[in-house]
Length: 257
Image (cartoon, rainbow, N blue to C red; front, side, top):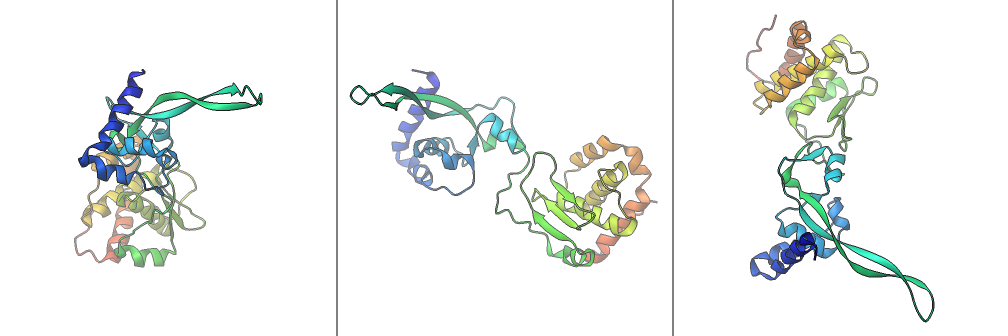
C-alpha cells in the first residue's frame, strides 16, 4: 500500500478515540466557501484530525496569495480513482472504483502571506475615521485578494477597495485619498505618491496607537527609494496633520520640515 494512503487510513482510525469526537462532528459542517467544502466527509475528518479548519494544495494556497512555509509537512487526503469497464451482459461502459490515491495538502497554519478574505468579509473601519470618509466622499469596499494588491484608491470614483482587514492597508489608501484632496494625484503607482502614502500611514498608525509592522514599511519604501521619502517630508506632514486633526488625537504632530 502507498505509505501516504496508509498514513491517511491510520489517521482516520483515530476518529474512534473519544477525544477526537468533537473534531469528527465539526467535519459535518460546510459553508465556509473554502476548497474543503467540496471534499468527502472522510477527507474533512482527516483535515480536522490534523488540527486545522482549512487545508489546500500547494498551488491552491498560491492562488490566494499564501505560500507554504519552508520545511512544512503535508498531510494526505484520499482521492478516488476510477476505471472504465464493459458490463458483460449489457456491453455498456461504466466506471468502477479502482482504489484511492493520496493527495498532499497543507494546513493554513503552515502557510504565510496574504490574509484570507471571504466573500462576506466586512471592512470594519474604526469610527474615528468616519468624518474624514464623509468629508472626502469616500466609498469603502471589501474585496477578495487578487494576488497582486491588498488595497487601492480610485481617483475618479473616490472608492477605496480593501482586500485585507489590516489597519495599515486602510491607512495607506486613506493617505492616498487625503494626498489627492490636498495636492492632486496622478494615475498609476507613482514613486512619490506610494512613499507618501506608506510613510504617512505608518506615522498616523503610530500616533493613534495601532500596531504597525515598521519592518514592512521600511521594505516598502526601500522598494521605491528613500530619496523620494526625503523629498516628500513636507507633503507627508500635511497628510498626517489633516488626518490627526480630524480624529481628535491630542498628541503633537512631529515636524518633518
